[in-house]
Image (cartoon, rainbow, N blue to C red; front, side, top):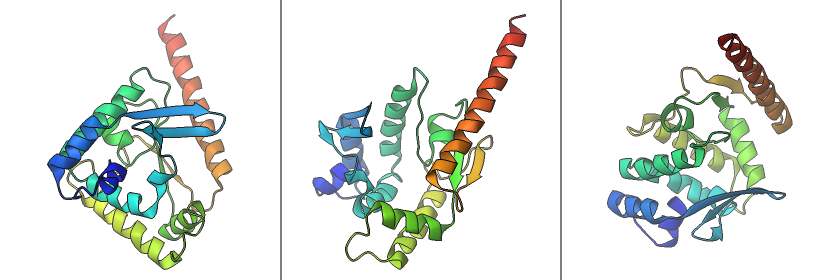
Length: 193
């Protein structure tokens, strides 16, 4: 929605216009050899949504209840059959509060800034200080917004990734999921006796 708002010069303060964009937007996720891809109105926007401009706009757009309502509905449609992994700042508290497993990833703002710079391949003119300031501002906005604030779910497994590689984080999450799955399997087998 933020990307479309920027592309159409829609005011980020215009909740009604942003809600209309959210309602009309055609989102599609694809998984393949190239990884997960996000398509928006028949256009691959996987990289575009990670740009600094879109990231900043997303935090503002997500404060509008009408936008969150439309997006939560879309996200729930994606997960209705189960077997999905989703990321987002309110996935475990608002979108799927009854999810089988919720992971809340944390890292120091400095490390998140370094990772963001690396992801953006050091966008020209972007300094570590600027990225750190943007992250801090977004965190504050998202934690204090009235609609779907950034909070860990009370039953989420929290993982501090500050000193972990992506591979180590993935391994921890898989270990937790496997342990949880074994536990659920044992509970189901006990219930069937």
